Image 1 (cartoon, one colour):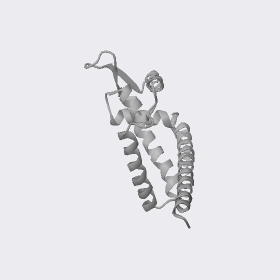
Image 2 (spheres, one colour):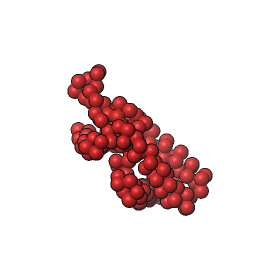
Image 3 (cartoon, one colour):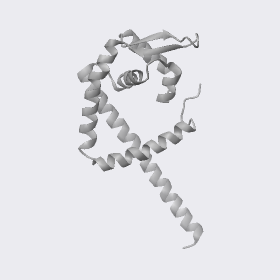
Image 4 (cartoon, one colour):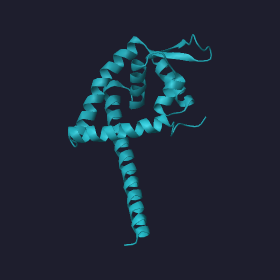
Length: 164
């Protein structure tokens, strides 16, 4: 086989492999996220996005909205609206930023802290049930390591952040 043809075949094969990888990644993420979210809704009256915000603020007290948006690769407006909803339910509080009067800092309230602690057990159990029944610990570790490398590269280059 001619080298040019071999390269074309390899490129098509790689392209199909990456396309299949992406499709599987997105569909698995969507199904896992939806199933775990439904479990949170049933048991705690929250959805996965609310849980993730609460967990973020627990682990990063005093975060700015822009830092939160960067972490979730989402627009500042969408993140701010999500925080408004959490604040209205008494789970987070905004505080003035002493270093920048134009921004505020967000922290969990006691109620938010208690909710995320309870919901964390449900989240972990749902993921364990959904993933561990199919994949071995070694497979989870290998996939996790590969995705962590990819995520760090995307974040380092600030790829995939919303514009504006």
